[in-house]
Image 1 (cartoon, rainbow over the protein chains, first blue to last red):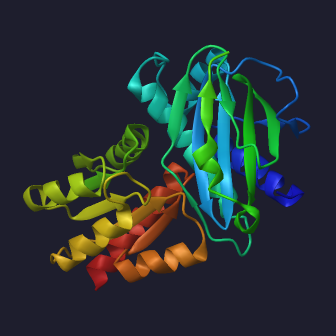
Image 2 (tube, rainbow over the protein chains, first blue to last red; image 1 turned 135 degrees about the vertical axis):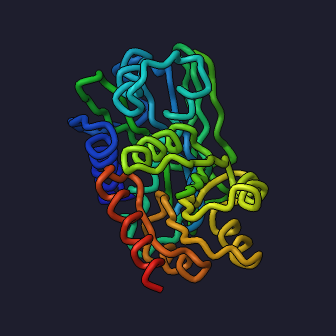
Length: 169
Length: 123
């Protein structure tokens, strides 16, 4: 993974939030996922990538931020336990990942249908053979992050997404 | 005019439905994937379809190819996160008439719908 790919995710997150939610986001300094996060993950949308780039993308929020962001996206205040809430989170990570991969020049990359995990303090275990970078963001709805763990397929021993696991805190 | 929305995300279908209703379209049917859409197109007979690409069970490209092979002639607008040129070409070859990349604004979706219907009318 190179810096331009991280920049693609910063740009796509800006694009999705400004276009679909009318929210301005501010990106912080990216850090490796082994660093202690600034907030507990309570809502995560997960997308797998395959093809020339393999790995995964995780959009994570504290519940309060997720509720504010989903209200801006859908115009409704949703219960975080409702299927519609998870659907909206999944669509957000889908758009962020899709817009980012379109900026990977010369790469043929496919994305999976999204999965959503909801639960206090969960951790999405990224593939161990790919560098994982967390991009912290802030928006009027609160803090959130985009974790990216992708690598060139040529150096992949097996699809990175097959090693994904979700752990309780 | 009858419009069919084909997207596995209920959120996205609702957003598109609201935009269509603001444009004055009232007869709107929804399908959650390509298979669901194929089971509904016969009875509903849509005059315009908005179709997502990545969906479980049957993706949007397979749906459009099947719909065209079965004689479906209504214009199809693909509304998707797949923004690469190669994907757009693949979609056009499959029988898609116009293309909208997510994220979109209400204005950009409206513009593409109007453009698509004008072209279909002129053809």
